[in-house]
Image: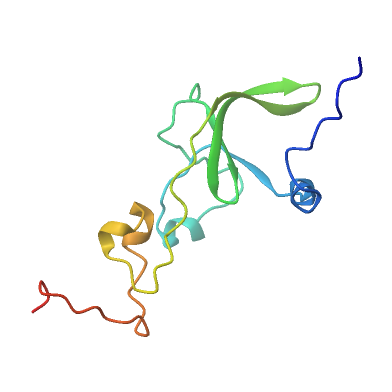
Length: 128
C-alpha cells in the first residue's frame, strides 16, 4: 500500500520567504558610554562589561533576541551552541483606524510613539 503524497506545510510563494538570508548577530554584552569616552578609545584600551564571562551570549535577528547560547570552538573558528530559544515578544499593533491608547501599545513603543494628528478623535461620555 502506497502512502499518499505529503502536502507541503506552506504554499510555494510562502516557502520562498524561508530562503531569504538575514544577518544573525551574536552579542557579547553592551554598555552605555559618553561620547567623550568613546572619542578617547585607542588600540589597547580595554572595555569592561558587567556581564560575567560565563554568561550565555545572545543571538539576534533583526535586532530581536531569538536565543541564548554558549560560545564553542569549531576548528579554528568559534560558534554558538544554542541553549535556549526565546519566546517572541508582542510585535504587532492592531490596526483600528484610530490612534492607540498608550495601554494598547507594547512596552517598547510607549515612549516612542506619538498619536497621529490625522487619526480620528473619538468622542465619548468619558471625554466630556
